[in-house]
Image (cartoon, rainbow, N blue to C red; front, side):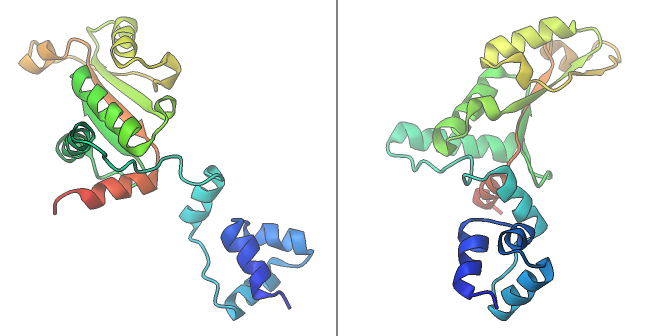
Length: 194
């Protein structure tokens, strides 16, 4: 028999997998599963288990309750930007793309100050037309957003189809900021108006 208190400690509090518990107790995974069922201990989904393995110290973000008007404005602006410009279809990533570095800087400030996201954990993808020098555009964006080149995914280059007004406005392309965290993405989506 495996005691409920031991399973709760190892599985629930310590975040061990059933295989890890079996290894610790020198028994089979089936025995661990059997006693978890007997004690009505709910199992994690695969995505929850993967999330715990990738974030062993807990969530890599926290919600910082706005304490003054400036922080409340930043919170409102960040949610508004995500609602208006963000990609909600992807279930695992917070994404927002735009050609305006000031807008992206505000969204980054929102993620860092309101949700405690480490700026260096953000990833970026640049999309440019083929008549824009890649190195020049990447240099522009890394300077404007104060990010490191290693945070950039490979730049996507799109063939140009003539002199459109959109292309003239986007001489340095469109930059998308990515933060890969399902929980934060879901929290932001839950705040959005329905």
